[in-house]
Image (cartoon, rainbow, N blue to C red; front, side, top):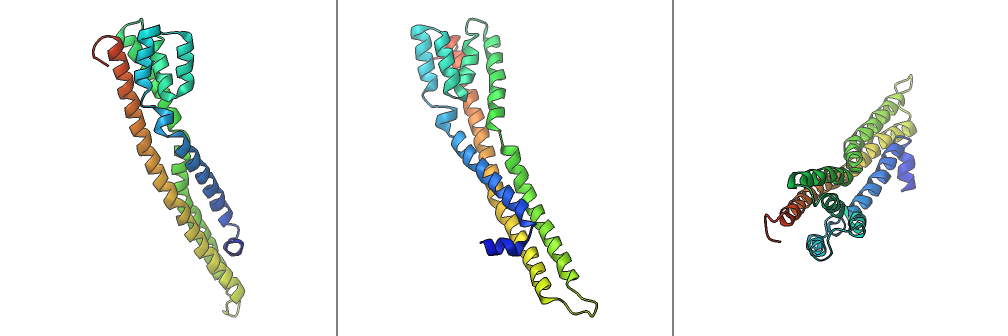
Length: 203
């Protein structure tokens, strides 16, 4: 592997750096976007049961805020549970926007890497082509060592750029769809919380 990196020359290092960042983001988002962490299935039922049995307490709100992103949304609404339906819904929408922004964290960077990696590979290819043309001596004969190095730089960088870009793009699309699904799930559960507490539907 080190021999390949040496053959690819200095243009490979930005691609390697981009791949490390992409791997870090993929690992972090895979862990953070689990449904059990963002929007636990049983949280709505547990919250409604506690509100009915004990009422809304500061301890309950603090626990909800610490539990998950959906818990933060519920806590924002329950702080205004004695207000009108519209006020409660507005506070939930504000917390929901903040939660959606939290879910989107680092995805822009991952999408940028997916777009940028092939361009970095292309840059390496161009640099390799420059070395290939520079290997021509005054007599028209090419320096074999310089020619081989130029070809290696051109091919390895193009390949590494694509290798980094493809999984980055796949995971970006996957996380984007997952975030959209989680946002819809949180919206549905938050609306149900409001409607149940205001007597507009059964739990």
